[in-house]
Amino acid sequence: MFGKRENTEHRIQPTAENQAQSGGSCRVPLLGKTRRQESFADPPGADKSNKRNHKGAGEVSNVAIDQQVIDQVITDDYSIYHADTVDVAAGIPDNSIGFSIFSPPFETLYTYSNSDRDMGNSKSSGEFWDHYKFLIREQFRAMEPGRLVAIHCMNLPTSKTNHGHIGVRDFRGEIIRAYQDVGFYYHSEVCIWKDPVVAMQRTKALGLLHKQLKKDSCMSRQGIPDYLVVMRKPGENLKPVEGPLNHFVGEDVPANFREVKYDDNRTAYVEANSNATPIDIWQRYASPVWTDIRQTNTLQFRAARASDDERHICPLQLDVIERALQLWTMPGDVVWSPFMGIASEGYVSVQLGRKFIGAELKASYFDLACRNMAQASKVQEELF
Image (cartoon, rainbow, N blue to C red; front, side, top):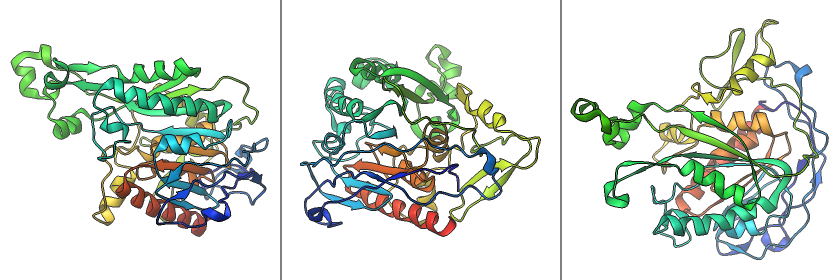
């Protein structure tokens, strides 16, 4: 599969009172200790000499969680909750998460639900940050020392109606400073190119319209890219993520790599001959600007082709998630998405042999997340 190496795994264990998988209120299950399991396979044709060998997974303590959830699904590979994400976060043991990747609500730009607990329903920027900072403090506590949090975000357009002027707000910088305030280090970031024509067609933003360029180009602007901002918890990483990369995902595939296709139509690229090396992959991933992300490679796109299910407003591209997991995790690591949405992060995590914890407040997103996670486990079982 797309994973590269062997490792122990976290097992997410429910208590006896938490066996119910749906309906009514129930407790968030305990996070159990790690256990040794079978190894995970490589992509067909991958060079197995490049396997990255884990030094051994850490443990998470058995800690009771008192917060209530509306619904939950618990398996050996993942634990997902229909609940307030801060409530779930409060029950995660200290120093137990290997990696976190997610898209937070973009303040009040989108409204996801009518719940008072939905951060996207904040009445102001100040109210949003008051709520979000509760979560950031929990993230700092729950992350393993030396491990990373990757936040997918964008700067936010301003409007005359809401802000008194047309412009762009440095939301990315506000996120960085909020995480620094609780103790995280600003580790890295990558700028992700987005097609300004697609953005213009979707948003009708004044600054992107050609007629505005002709009228007065002082009001014209470039498109707003995405960012993957990476923050690091201080301390020594006791479980190094080591070894070379052995497959590439994205567009403009490096020379001497060949395509590998899987049953769910995802594709990766592995070395086709001796002229291809893991350095070719690293040079592309190390770029501060990713112009080679497949923009339509999202779970929303996949669901749209198959059904009329709920569409996620701003899904994270699977290529971005997979690259982050390749770079900064090992099989068996626990990956956490506090804003799970339709479970894009969980879908890729499980297929790569990681464990996943996610929380989602909106019922329709949680329902689709359940189906996506079941499909991820099915593909993993069938292929590997």
